[in-house]
Amino acid sequence: MVINITQDSPDISSDNPNKSKHQLISEIHGTAQRCVLAITGGGSSAIADLLAVPGASATVLEATIPYHAQALSRYLGEEPENSAIAGTARGLAMTAWLRARELTGDSRNIFGLGASSALATNRTRKGQDRCHIAIQSATQTIEVNLVMDKLIRQRSDEERLIAELILHYIAGYCGIESKPPELLPGEVPEERHHQASSTWSELLMGSRLSTFQGEHPIVIFPGAFNPIHDGHREIVQQAERILKDRVYLEISIQNVDKPTIDFLEMYDRQQSLVNYPLIFSCASTFEEKSRIFPGCTFIVGTDTMLRIADKKYYGDSNTRMSAAIAEMNRHKVGFLVFGRTVGEHFLTLADLELPPGLSQLCRGMDEDAFRLDISSSEIRRTRQ
Image: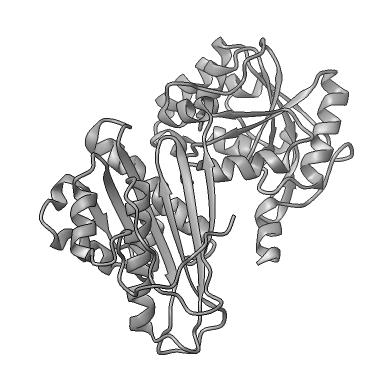
């Protein structure tokens, strides 16, 4: 969907042309909405604009500018594939929303705003000057993308434009009408928006553990599937042949070392997996998965099995790892383990040294039966 932009005034205003930016921000502060902002690359002056108007404490819970690459990675919980893409802005917005929820102890009337940009610089940079703005709440994800005319605009112009766009979209989210900033010919923001179902919203808020509503046990293939590839498809075929049962794909919206997945990302994954039964869950570990899906068989690679048997994922505690494995046994789950390339070697289950309590839950696939060296991350890199 493309937002129609009217080119009237370089200042943000409502339908009253005499309304100032100060007045607009006062109206924002007068709503019940509260937010955390995370802005990198450009547009950070929007934070100063919000704080300069009395009443800011009613709106702004926290604001941060993770500008350095290391600061950005730490804020997101992983190194982004690119700092100036829509996915990074959405990751910032999700992390900001989670922070707002932590600060308020509530999911109502809060949102996270994230923004990432690639602006004019004093060095030669390939690509377009662009900005990405995202808003995340308990019920929706909003994404805005704009390519700017780098031949006409200077960096100061781009910075001011992004700040004004941020305020414009905050106002819109708060239910306040505002006119967008003036744009040059050819500059047209593109917006994507997804209003979550109650099921997805409950999953994000933690009041629901998964979207599965059938009977256990089932066969589950956990993964990100970003994107699904021939290796995944072959594993599903092999598993269904061996186990004589249908395979469900499972995507956890939470991950040990990745940002929480937003509603637009969930929608995109769902659309790419329409040929498979799909479950979304909030179980980031197999200990949690075993509680949600008792008696199930999980399809995993040897790389995943190595992580399950690595105490660093249990706070470097052998005791904690043993307790997690014991819980998997209590819930009577099993693992069908496919070979994967780990480092420079292709490893099957027979090559792994696993704790006895874990190894007894596993059944392996021989290399002669299955081997396909491919990964989703490599596919994403080749697409950039």
